Every structure is written in C-alpha cells, then in structure tokens.
Image 1 (cartoon, rainbow over the protein chains, first blue to last red):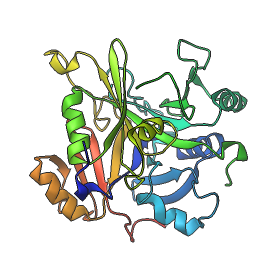
Image 2: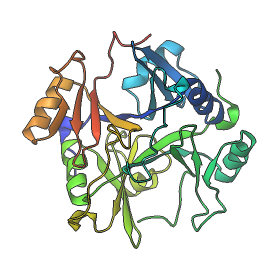
Image 3: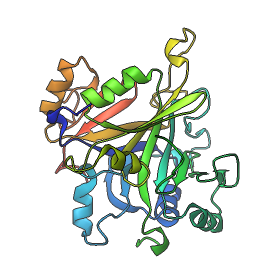
Image 4: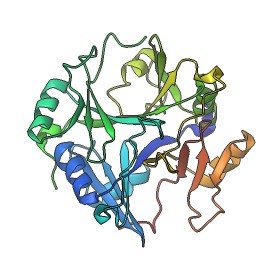
Length: 163
Length: 163
C-alpha cells in the first residue's frame, strides 16, 4: 500500500537497549563494530549514548554528527542506569530471546564480507551465538554484545532468501 | 575514536521484534506509521516481514526496495511465529521495559512535527504511553505498537538535550 503522504518525512531513527557497563559496551560498539559516538546525554540517574556508522564518508563534523542523532536513520541508543556496572546484585539484562522476556530479537549489522568480518571478530574475542559454518544458514552469523544481546551479521544481499 | 578502516562499509541494517499477529502489526506499521513492506520471507514455522520508510523519494522500484533490505539502514524486521495469532494460551511478548525481561527499550520514529503526528495517531486510536503533554519532556511522545512495544516519537532535533 502507498504510505499516507502525511508520513512522508517520517524515519526509523533509533533502537534503544539498556547496558550494564557503558565502558565495556562503548568499547565493543566503537572498536569492534566501528560505530561512532554521536552524542552523550547525562541525567541524574542515567546516561544515554547515541551511536551510528558514519555514512557521510567522513564529511560530517562532530557537531553535525551530534545534531544528526534524531534526524538520521541507523542510530543505536545505549541507556546506562548508573550503578549497574558495580552492583553485585544486578542480574543483567534480558536478551529478549528466552522466556521470560521473549519479544525483541536482535539488531543486525550489514557487512561487505561476513566471513572476513567474523575472522576479525574472533581476533577481538567476541562471543558467537552462531558462526557462519553453524547450522543451515551459511550466509549469516550471530554474535553477542557484552550484555548478551544478539547481533546478526548479514551480507548486502542473500539472493535465495525471500521473494 | 576513529573507526577501524576495516569497518568502513558496515551499517546498522535492522532491528527484529516478534509480533503476535502480522495482519494487525503490518496494518499498524504501514497505515499508521507509513512504513513500506520491502519483502516477506516465509519459512515452515515462521514468516519474516521487512519494513522501512522510503527514503528515495519514490524513486525505487518494488524490486529495488526488496533488494535493499540488507544493504540499507532503518529496516524493521517483524518475526511471526505461526499460530500465535489464534492461540488462546499465548501470553504475548515482553516489551522489554518491565521485569522480568527488562533489556530492550524501544524503537524511535523521527517526525517533522511531534504534536501533529500525535494528533494523527489519536485519530487511528493508537495507545499512548506518554503524550507530549505528559511529564517533563514535552518534545517527545511514546506510543505503543499492537504488541505493546514502546515507540518513541521524536522531532528532528531537541536543542536542549545533550552536548
């Protein structure tokens, strides 16, 4: 169906997940995945971190990147509730893939070469849920972020998947 | 930090959430939010629906849109496990915002005018978690999708939020 013209300038801006320790998560999303921190917003009891891949070919300034956090697509928001990183009673967050708490499934990162990307992830000691060689779907992989959220690694196209 | 050049062509492709009834969810994401169905992939026990906002100004053909589902950003993947829509014992999915199952928070849609968008949502009978007039943050709203997932409605910029 054709979208209502009133929604013409809507966009899917971001996805928010809670993280236990922002130092660990930022290192993972920046160093391992190559995302950039667009902006950081600190409140009394929590801090928000907005990350995204640079799609400008390095043309945007840091200020422009920060300003883009609500206007562009493909932004990941990490919410850190202060204290979880050092609270021994904190049990961690649900990945969304097990009961109780099933609902959200994963985020997915497109890469030019899944095999090559996975070899690189291995060097960083990233935990895998599914290597390309596991199971039937050899085109994709699933890695785990520091909180255990699933991250699908997908190629630019999977010719035999879907109409 | 500057991203590793090896990640230069990585992208945040999609976010996956499970839905109880795809007819209800597709109507919501297409009609109310204005997303378009890029492709649909049916397996024996589940079906995947890939949705996104058209960012090409109507220039892409249906085939090109379908092919873009792993290469572009801002894609939403809905997973329907067959049968949940008519199973009286199915308890629904966790939004990720209550215990047990806290982790994932929300997805966010950028709109040109939050007040105007919310007036439109009211006409569709959309459930609100937070209207712009509720609470302190008057710039944003939170609506609920048919499964109860939170969707933040954000303007293109919030000048006073963040460094």
